[in-house]
Length: 398
Image 1 (cartoon, rainbow, N blue to C red):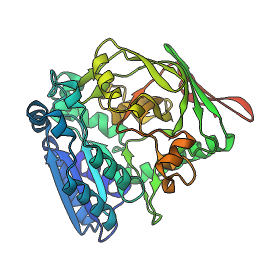
Image 2 (cartoon, rainbow, N blue to C red):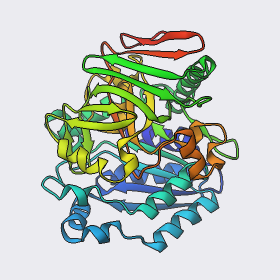
Image 3 (cartoon, one colour):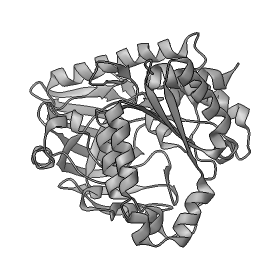
Image 4 (cartoon, rainbow, N blue to C red):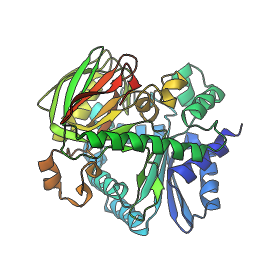
């Protein structure tokens, strides 16, 4: 099976849904070159007027961390900010191919420098993708990623797993994603109808209750841009999610999947919340990496997302740990600390930062998803109709 051609078709047709005459920006690792070429070909074939490929890789990032100062790694670059704004003004689409070709490239690096961000550029990009351009992030197989999963660079085996997770084995993968998106959207509508005030995650090592913003919007499957064109920000996606009240999270959680951060792997992570804030962090490995990210800014210690995923997920059915957040977060229920989604509340995109904060939305330079679901997870929601089961023993029952 020609996995790469099917992959490129899904990215272009279901992911960013390229329209004739549209520009496309493509970010990729040098290890993704063959796949990137196929995506460029598919984009032009779909009518793109231009495609701008932007490549980097792990050794280049390590060079920056080793030799640049923390201040330089955080410094604003006006030209980069302006470039992003112009892409948004032109109505371009943005694709990012992910899939770490060398997950250990930053081992031993300064955690603060590895986590450093150019905040003005982060904010410009966030503003662009939150309603001004269509975007999609997709995992691209490569030998390094395969080695991380299987202990050997078996790319064919990884393609088989990714093919299952991304529905590339369907007769028409892009149409299959459109159908799955409709199912997830229906779940979101059912949740909104309940007018929930809080949800509770309960499983082995996890008992976390999170408050919700009144009238919050549950998103599932995909989104629609200002021109009414549907797209899918993440492929694969199996979640229904919203942004909670940043001030209302209490209890404990335990990760059920490893967390991959820029500076290394985190396993056995356990967090304690009080009044919305992460107050305690422990882990079997990598607690210092988490602490470094939580120190990025004040909002990093508060939740920006709560998400629901059940065992019907294609990623769960693939039966492996992908060591890639894009995939692993869609294997089970998860939450994310850091930035909220403005579109999670009615009219949120047009609100000022102060108005969003007053509602309970979080503001941060980070957004990190962590998986707490899987076998045995139960999720209940509380609202005007009382407490209702949403997921029971990892099965959607609402």
